Amino acid sequence: MKKLALINGANLDRLGKREPEIYGSTTLEDIVAAVRRQAESLGVALSDFQSNHEGAIIDEIARLADSGCEGVIINPGAFTHTSVALRDSIAGSGMKFVEVHISNIHAREAFRDNSLTAPVCAAQICGMGLEGYLAALRFLAK
Image (cartoon, rainbow, N blue to C red; front, side, top):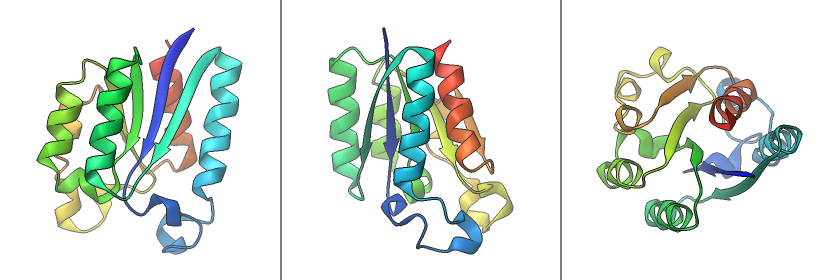
C-alpha cells in the first residue's frame, strides 16, 4: 500500500474562522476527512499533520522520509514565502511533494507570488480550495 501524507502549516488550524472571504467556511477537519475518504477509495495509507511551528513541520518531514512515505501534500501556509529551512527539508527528503494553496496566491498580495517551496515540489496547485487537495492526492497516488 502506498504511503502518503498531508501536512498543513501556519494558521490552517483556523480555517472556517479566519478570513472566510478568502478561505471559505471549510475547516481543516473537513479537508482532512475528505482527503482521508478519497485516500481510502484509492487504496492509499494517509497520515496527516498540522503545526504552526516551522521546526515541527521540518521534523515531521524527516520522520516521514525515514518511515518510507512516498509523497506529501503540503500547504505550508505563510512558510511558503519565508522558509528556506522548509525548502531545504523538502528538497532533501527524497519524497515527492505537491504544494497546495486554498486561495490563488498569485492573485493576492505581491509578496505571495514568491514561493520558496514550489521549485522543489513536483507541482503547485492553488485557488481550487478543497479540490486542490484532492487533485494532489490523485496525482501522488498514481
